[in-house]
Amino acid sequence: MNIHNEIRVIFPSLSCNEAFARTTAGAAAAQLDPSAAEVIDIKTAVSEAVTNCIVHGYRDRQGNIEMICRVTDDNTLYIRIRDKGCGIPDVKKAMEPLFTTASCEERAGLGFAVMESFMDSVKVNSTVGKGTTVIMKKKIAAKEIYTAAMSRREGADEELK
Image 1 (cartoon, rainbow, N blue to C red):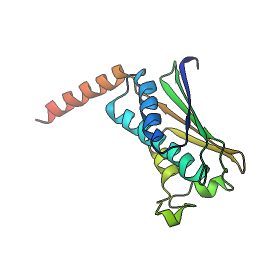
Image 2: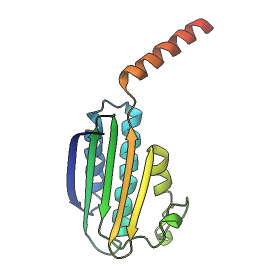
Image 3: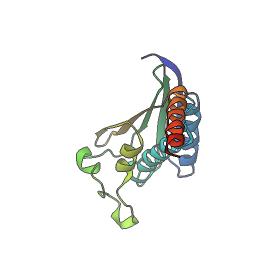
């Protein structure tokens, strides 16, 4: 796997920067010519990861969030989002649907589940007192494959008429 392009940004853990992170990830993904649905999936997963940094990682303070987006020659988008916040004591437990450390703030505890549902892979590394890193990957369907599949489907639909 060769890296065609890499974007690295560092931004303050302000809720208004969640939109910035979504847009940046969408721009990185655009190099792979994704479908609209793929872009929405990527932006949603990034939104969840960045929101986790803001709400949980830097609960009572502001810090920096680093995001790296890599475009590879096998049509894969690699996204790493890292904070230097409080860390997660039990990553396995934190990744369970409905688990939240912010229940008093009406959080649903679905952030990691959402990331996993929209991306091909999600890995979380965390050290208490040092921060959390979320690594997500999504392979973008090649347009020629998508177009061929749609043509076959249209042909099958015509046969049904």
